[in-house]
Length: 282
View (cartoon, rainbow, N blue to C red):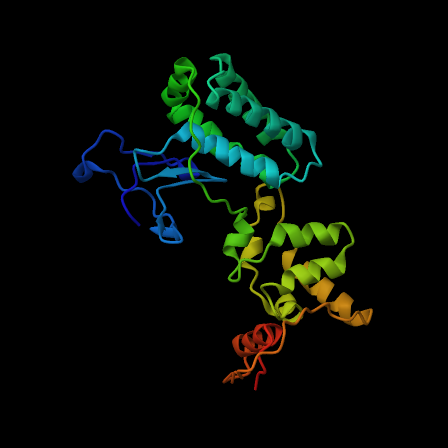
């Protein structure tokens, strides 16, 4: 990973602003690539555990606005703190970015962020305000300048990916929160469809997986992790026990054939997804 200008990830603050490259303090190693999207350099990152900056040209105020927009879009809307609280935070940040902000808006953002973390029901709500609070703490001058300048702040270019610690820990990066939520709503077939987008063998993994997702489950901060592995096994068994026909969409048949050598989990998964793409597999 390249030199880090600033990092507050996991509350371990490294601030190299104003230092020469030779004097840069090493930050905790982050698993962030140098190039992220279509050969674009990754120069900054906001996530559930803080923010990381690699370039002085990043406007943290605009970045915070874009991040809150993504959080608002990801909110399920079931609890008021997350649904309404993040909306008010976003409206406040929009007002600041439009040159209409007031100094008291910063206090509003801080109080709301802290309240949402304490009272939201899901991890999007509990972790969403974290990097915003870090930005307000360590880049307060940038917010104050934007408010004092009374100018419209141009929008930057950002890419968004909703994730969670359990998803990051999963070798195939299953959308664990979504499929667990579908099970909670008794939508077992929809949950299995979602699992199969990245896991061709849910019934097998529901029995033999070493469940790194559960060891990274945020529920551990309270008591025990969500039984993610068992839930995966449940929906896979439900399909068999209730004789449900798998809802697999196969693309138009291709001319080329593919030979898969080996019938282990990797070979079976490879054959499964190639078949869905329309390739005859042997």
